[in-house]
Image (cartoon, rainbow, N blue to C red; front, side, top):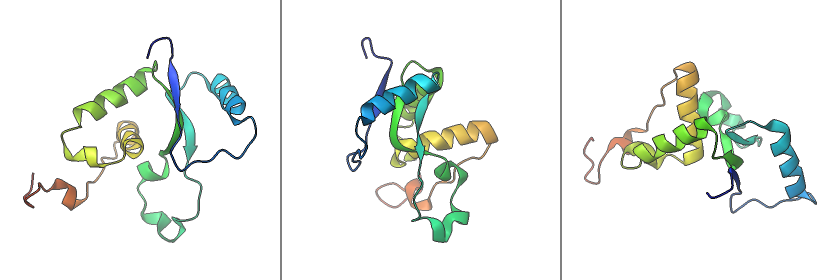
Length: 127
């Protein structure tokens, strides 16, 4: 990463709507230091019909658009765990949601449930 201690990840379907949005982003970084990940939770209404059934870790995950502080020990641990999980079924979960699951498990002891199909190999057998 060279001399940089963080990066901003913007999902491909995001479109900035404010002028000088990068300046505002930089201001938020300075205001909120230190942090591991700085971003926003999903704030739409598409989940309203089934909101009560959504796991805590999904409701509280950073939506992918965020500033990632690569010098923060928590982010280092989360990324290290993602690397360990690369060859296993957890790798099928989007990284931003998976990191929220890990934090939720560590903070509250809520172990994530995997969908039964994730636990099958290519031949449909349990792994």
